[in-house]
Length: 473
Ligand code: ADP
Image (tube, rainbow, N blue to C red; front, top):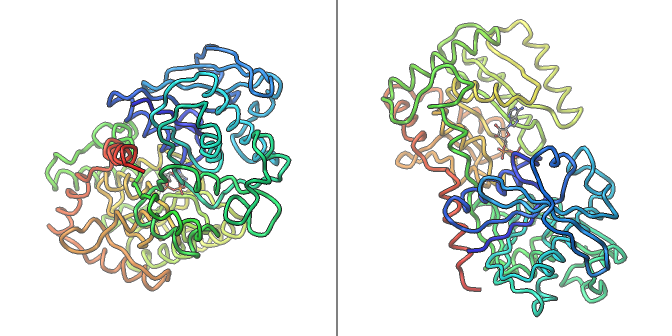
């Protein structure tokens, strides 16, 4: 199959979050399994540090010159869109966070589309990601006579961001805004502007989001950021596919940052012993007490979405119960930061807790390889990677039943992969912690071995995407 992704990120070259992980992991798995895969991205200035070459220069419909720079990456072709006259659009330090983001990505979407028109090739799958490129599916429908795209797919990574623009900006796409400024089409509520993500929802042939439960939750007003009427209308073309993780990178058998390696092929006792030894190294590094009681961790952004009040309570409760806690994360608001700093001061002389307010992947690997439990009490979670990495490192997740967490962390005895709770409350999390702390002996050993053997590789996810690619409309 000839698959073309058009996106704003690809991990790890140009990554801000999960969108980049999916584009990077999925395109790599697709190319490795023999498909012809291309990823079209803006030519961000920081990408020019890599070996790239100019492939061609063409003129857009508006007679603007665009050069395409190419590089091979993970067996995929990366095609980078470099406008001649508006170089400043992508010559910036960051990928997002500018006042003119909507204009920048509207320009990118149109330029990428013009590039496809210029090439005039058959594309089996055109795969678009979030609001930055979703509107291309509308352009494909408008110009279906000039372009041979067999199917367009839109993946929703975070529908909270939808891209809203006025008529004048929308007209830069070369289509008449009046035609689309209707409540049933792209109109943003009652406002006089247009919603780019809505364009993708209406005109893509299939839509995916990053977990089956989140695909259902999107039908509800409380989860869909005002898009539920459209989500309901197009329910039959929305599918949930869990993300994967790169199992060659997240691998306790080879991870260069951990001290004692282990794998799911080892006996349960050998795994427990290696994790115990890693815990001793980490306790020393973080100046914590040597303590063989349970070590609970939290790794992630300290944002409202991630349940910071429940995380803070779990720290207090774990300490009360004689366990240890490591927190690794950066607060996303001043209020959250102040709360955790206050807690840190409260326990500054307690050797059973470590507060690490930093982003540090190496440290996260040490924590995954040493912890007994990891807590993930999110309010909402489209997919979540933390639990999948934790499985791989034999760390049992304790998670709230929402989105991708509900699909992966199960407590029912036969299929158990961790501990979970439903109400968003301190009490519900405390009860889940109690159940976890009482879960010992051979039951715990066999659960650890079982979760290490779960398959959350990109290969598995890629096969699910292929089913959607091949689905009839
Ligand atoms: P989200 O994308 O919403 O932040 P995910 O669970 O999908 O959450 O992914 C979080 C990823 O970021 C995981 O790989 C986790 O290990 C990593 N991570 C988050 N915070 C930190 C941190 N402070 N230091 C190191 N890694 C972190």
